[in-house]
Every structure is written in structure tokens, then in C-alpha cells.
Amino acid sequence: MQRDQGVPGSQSSPADEKIARVMAALDVDSADKAAEIAKQLAGTGCWLKIGLELYALSGLSLVQKFKEMGFSIFLDLKLHDIPNTVARTMQVLVDSAVDMINVHCAGGYEMMARAAEIGRKSGKKIIGVTVLTSMGQEELSGVGVNRMVEDQVINLALLAQKAGLDGVVASAREVVSLRRECGADFLLVTPGIRPAGSEQNDQVRVLTPKEALENGSSYLVVGRPITAAVNPREALFKLFD
Ligand SMILES: O=c1ccn([C@@H]2O[C@H](COP(=O)(O)O)[C@@H](O)[C@H]2O)c(=O)[nH]1
Picture 1 (cartoon, rainbow, N blue to C red):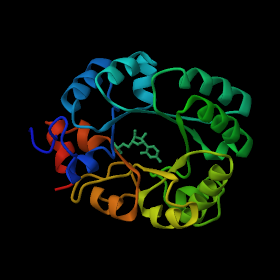
Picture 2 (cartoon, helix red, strand yellow; picture 1 turned 90 degrees about the vertical axis):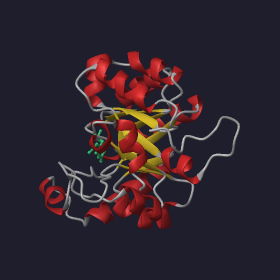
Picture 3 (cartoon, helix red, strand yellow; picture 1 turned 180 degrees about the horizontal axis):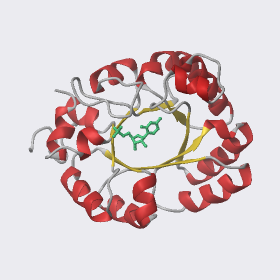
Picture 4 (tube, rainbow, N blue to C red; picture 1 turned 180 degrees about the vertical axis):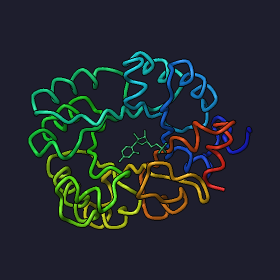
């Protein structure tokens, strides 16, 4: 599928702008599969997201390769440890070609502030995970948090902002409130994106790509709707049909 890719040197179209806000999550069981999907998505302008599975398989080895293919890269390792350990690990990660890295907001203010400081010096974006999009109200209560999900998301996002992070990961369902509380420049990266009628899988707080953009998400993280498709490139372009 060759549509909506723009002509080099021309103005980007609204469709290009939407694709540039998609982060394709490469949750696959081999580096070869990841490289094959990357090849199919090359030139579209979308980001790639390397998560725990691919990192466990291949570490940072694919980062440079994907960068050379023209992708921006979000390394989704969700660091959650004491401030010293997170800071030392963050220093290693920012020295690679990644563009964005995350920590868990639940690691606390001091840990986020140390991570943010390293991000600032390196020019890389550091964001914080609020409440996983696979968790609903009951799951949140199960880990001892007796607040409404949205209140907890906002509470953690405000703490992340105070600590100097560039943004947060949350569900697109919370984006309207997050924009109001955290402002226009705070990055809101939203997984749990599902085109209408597609499998929800283990995601609980979901929204369609169109709704997520309308609400004000900065980036949409999309995994299985792209990676499990027969034609990932076509699936990417169909997200906004
Ligand atoms: O709250 C979160 C934080 C991260 N993720 C990650 O996003 C993708 C979503 O994949 P799908 O296949 O589109 O469900 C995946 O890599 C998660 O680790 C998240 O889903 N929710």
C-alpha cells in the first residue's frame, strides 16, 4: 500500500501527521520478526517502540539499526527501582540512539527527578507510566489504591510533572483531564488503542485511534492491531479510516 506517504520535499499531509503520532509496538518473539516489520513500516513516519520482550531478546542492538532506517524510537522498559539504580541505568540508555525512555511513576518523586535530570542533559524525552492500561478499577483496588483510576492517573501525572518528566503514559480515556491538569506541552503517550471492532486482548481502558487523537493524545501506542496483521503497513494506514 503506497498511499499517504508524502513526496520528499513536499508539505506533509494531515494523514502523514497522524501516522507520525503512531508508535508501533514491536512485541514479537524474534529480532528477525521485528526487523521484518520495521522494513514494512519504513518510510511511513511512524515511531517504533521496543518493549520488554524485544529488549530481553536483543538488548539495544536493534536501536541503531532502526534509527538508520529513519525511525524515532521509544524504549519502553518502565524502569522501577531505587533512584540510584534507575539513574545509572538511565545514563546507559540515553547514551544509545533512543529518543524516549520511561520509568514507573510509582517509583516516586526522587527516582523520577533523577531520571528527568539525565534526560534533560541528554536531550532525550523521559516519561512516566501512571496506571497500566490493562488495569481497571478492581485491579487498582487489588494493589491497595483506593482512588478512582482517573484520579490516580492525574495524581501520578502531576507528581511526574513536578519531578521534571516530559510526559506520561496513560489511557487515552484520561487525556482530556490530563490536558486540563498538565497543560498543552506535556506529552501524553497512550497505549490501549483499538480500532473499532478489533480484539481488546488484555487491554481494559481502550479507545479508538480517532477518539484518542480527538481527545488530545500526543502519541498512540499500537501493538497487536499492527503486528498481528497480515500486512502491518496496510494496518497502520487503516488505523484512521
Ligand atoms: O499502560 C501501558 C503501558 C505500556 N503498554 C505497552 O503498549 C503496548 C500495547 O500493545 P497492544 O498490542 O496494542 O495492546 C505493549 O507493548 C505494552 O507493553 C501498555 O499496553 N499499557
